[in-house]
Length: 388
Picture 1 (cartoon, rainbow, N blue to C red):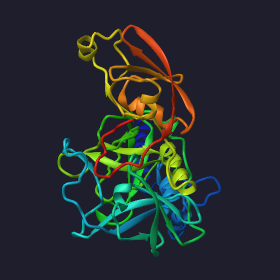
Picture 2 (cartoon, rainbow, N blue to C red):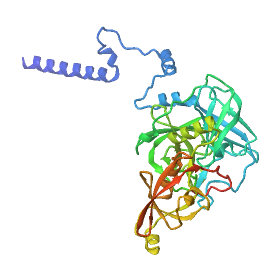
Picture 3 (spheres, helix red, strand yellow):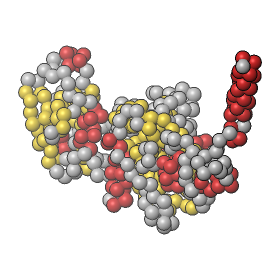
Picture 4 (spheres, helix red, strand yellow):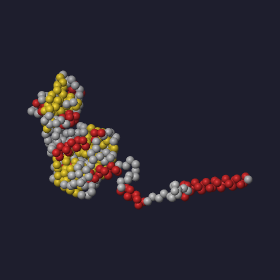
């Protein structure tokens, strides 16, 4: 009996070993799904699934890229390049790109289709002084474009092509952006063809960069390079959040700090240029300066915040209202201002030919001055020094 039990134990051990080996090397020999038929992958169906828009990886941004990419085009211009004009000369690590320079009379950039009947948004510096402009669509078509209007103060421009039924991009909500939100940058860097890069929103409301008169940049670490100027910054659903404009770089390439103009600003500029031929902005004729603690102490001012007025244009709106050099602007209407950028934006938002109450501190007195707002004069391209 003992011998019989020993033989049985050895047989069970061998059988279990065989089952283990088969389960490891040939599992399909051991079990099948319910129904008894082994699972088979139809390889010929995989490409069809991809073409239909299926994503094989969770969290993929392919749907957003597919949605937005047809609306982003390349821009080729014939333009005389000024080698001295590349970003802010006082800050050589800031670069505002004309595009990949192919020679002394040509440049490339990007643009975004914003209406089906042929209107496009891009940067002013992409098309500035351009003799001819050619648009390259995502479907391979190439067509000439004309400039509808430009706004050097915001570095935006509107183009028009004689085509209908174009894939217009959907506008998103840039005002709702938060640091950490995922974004994609789409454009034509180095003229290699349409390229999509991804990153996050690194900061919002960036000002004081010395790039534009009116600054309210979205900062992102999505790679932006020469040729991306005028391209689209979109959210994870493919909606337009901004127009890519500049990067911070010591090498000339992307270092993870790029800047885009919010779509809220771009839309306002676009509508003004299309309907009026000019962007309607308020102007009061003063030269502002940020108020520092040292300045407040030096001038014996009774306030430590606000914007110091260092000059008032003779005969301008502010002068007519009684504003004087040395006044400190505290509020424009009901909007508090604590920096030059805030004052510029608050005044620009005022409707020309309408009255506005501006609160200033003069010595120990707080005064409410009623200013009749004027239309902001058109900026001179050669000089972008902010003046309000």
